[in-house]
Amino acid sequence: MWTPNSILRPVKSLQPEIDLTVLGALQQINAALGEQAELHHVGSTALLPLLTGGTVDILVRGNRGALKAMRSTVEALAKLQELPRPVSLLFEDREEASSRLRVRSIFAADPLVMGEYRALQRTYAHTPGPRYGQAKQRFFESLLAPSETPSASASSDRLPPFRIEIPTERLQLVSPLSIDADEYARYKRENQAFHLEFGAQNPRYLEASFWQERFAEEALARLRREALTFLVRRLDTNALIGSCHFSGFLGGRYQHCSVGFNVAHAEQGQGFMTEAVTAAIDYVCEHWEVHRVEAFYEADNAKSGQLLQRLGFRVEGVLASYLLLQGTWRDCTLAALHR
Image (cartoon, rainbow, N blue to C red; front, top):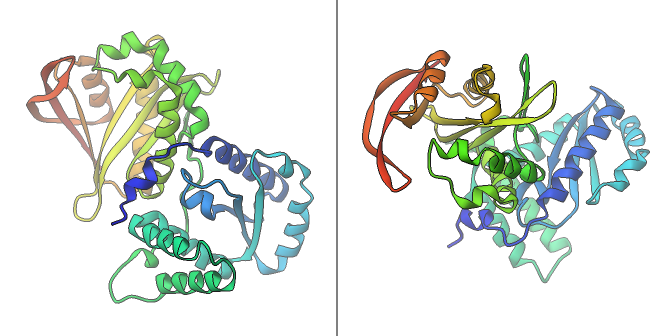
């Protein structure tokens, strides 16, 4: 039986090239069109970013009357041809694009649908042409067919942005891409001794290859609203000074998640993480419909406790012998914030 784990175990990934291509294309098209169009990363490189080696598809969604002029403007961008991967531009009006984006959101929400689609592709792998196109069209139509029970097909066609960016007074929070792996591994190496005080560190945390795979995996997990990481940068220097990670998302009657964070040793005591984590929590509560955010920290870690207290977290108890750190079982404090 197919399982979604196969998506998350890449042998080799072209994700850095895909990330650079998408970022470059979106920046160039945005600069050329301004606010005339909505841009979305669609197609195989968006749905199976760890496995595909194909063309990057960019959907330009706008008003029918303006599409012809937008097409001429964008196709004149010579720099699009200089990007690491080939770019295919799809120009569709809002009604046509809505169906494509609803299918895209269904794939992102349900990995089993992805597995069915991969099975369809394998079935027609040696017989490309009209028959495959017809089968794919029928498959998409079945996904969009009205259902008596709520499903992903009823969800909004607004997709999460390719890269989430949150500015604050002194910082910029960005969701990581695999192209950030080298810089983040360097940050972990520079702060290895400091972070070791607050828990055992996997030796692979110091390797860029680990974070390249991790950030690539999260691109898919973020679309499925399973995990979200923010890298924290100073606005004045653009230096990477920390990160904030959310996991364990539960919806329905629960609507909660867990948060963790770390900061560079040299940047302590300036309120940066209070500013960053506040903005990150505001984002997940508003856009991911989270009601309760939990944080677990070693009972002796006074700095984390003080930071969480400033954020409005309340201690709910101590979990005895909860976490194995450096060969010893440690007690952990559970704190939570409700919105």
